Image (tube, rainbow, N blue to C red):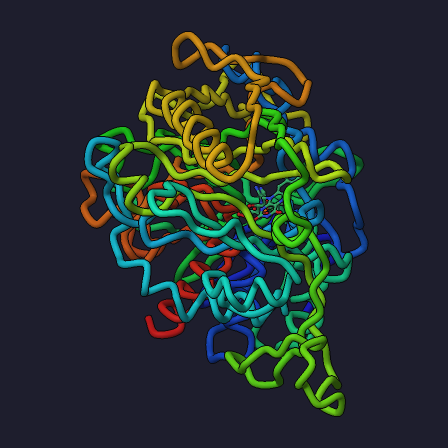
Length: 521
Ligand SMILES: Cc1cc2nc3c(=O)[nH]c(=O)nc-3n(C[C@H](O)[C@H](O)[C@H](O)COP(=O)(O)OP(=O)(O)OC[C@H]3O[C@@H](n4cnc5c(N)ncnc54)[C@H](O)[C@@H]3O)c2cc1C
């Protein structure tokens, strides 16, 4: 059911819900949709309206303003406002669903590089990754079946040579607009579900808790009217999930007096993105690289027969042996190959994961390298409140983001590009020119808006990190805040390590896993 906060008076108490999900972006909507039709009575707080398309009104987006720390100001001063959208559907209104699950190595500690790891095995997410793919009709969950992808992409990877330290991996994307907007994917189900109410024009301002901060008692919420705070109301539920993105969820917790077990001051610390250089190097090949290889690395549309049964076998519809009568339904998405380190290389080099996109020129004798990589967890990279500035709608302090990199991050970039040079020279490259300055310390990079400058990626990970022990993080293996019995999070704030893959497929998988947990409690 859809409801708007404009439909009831100031001071209203909305109560008797089993669950209140705050935030209706990728995480909140995936969670709500999976719980639609269950016995749980659910309220979803959505800051915008279902009519908004493309961009939120500027007054609401300004709530996402904030202060960039010294390093971030050099890299991307508008990051806080630019890299997220405060509206129904959240930041998915802008994204292209570049997707790839995290690798097993991302979940494990990497001796000599980082001790941080996930508190459950990668295999636990496998069924949820499958469900996330099926839900979005984003293609088959077989990213590592390279022979399949060589056929689907009409191409092939570089022939593997003994001693190669890099290999290929597959990314998917969904560029069809109708799939972009999570509210469109979830909307009808949520609108008609008897057990779900989506409350529009509803912003969470603060959580109220018991004096020991171990139990959330209610939410202080408000509407927006004429670009300013409208009326206040209260929400009471047995359990709450913060799904406001990896920055705003931290801000609201800080505005609420740092709930939970924050003795070790972890809240807001360890903020990570995927550092990115759009054109980090230019490569020349003595003669054109074979067209097939170029094809494998080219972003291209793939049409596969979409099986009715989740988890069924996908058939490449242009394969000669497919009976045309079977081609009644297609799954259309984009896919392409990238270069990644092998697990052995990662272990030997003691660096973060990375992926390199090869963009060939039409003649096929030159390529540009786009790289993004794993940021090592860093306690000094943190979100705090900037008490000197308030947001223009509710008048609450804005976020300050002191994003920092460590020497390990510099080393990952340097080694990744060196390994790529070695690999490509073995496969026919005759020239390799770095475009970006990788000299100097952890805070020295090429800055600016040009293609060779350090950029931030738009993924907000780590400031609510998951840990087995309360001493080591903010939420437990079930995404529940350590020390608070009824507060959870959904989103990539809880990622303890960042991998190199875009995060939303993992956000959705984790939200679906959380749904299973919440249905049982
Ligand atoms: C340009 C761009 C391209 C991207 N491309 C990709 C990509 O290709 N692949 C990928 O994996 N990721 C991509 N991302 C990242 C992706 O969009 C995010 O990872 C994802 O949207 C995060 O989901 P979320 O639900 O945690 O947060 P969001 O999607 O940001 O949703 C948060 C929701 O919470 C609401 N909210 C915030 N504060 C409050 C409050 N106080 N009260 C009530 N509601 C509140 C917001 O209005 C919003 O609806 C991209 C990001 C950008 C900016």
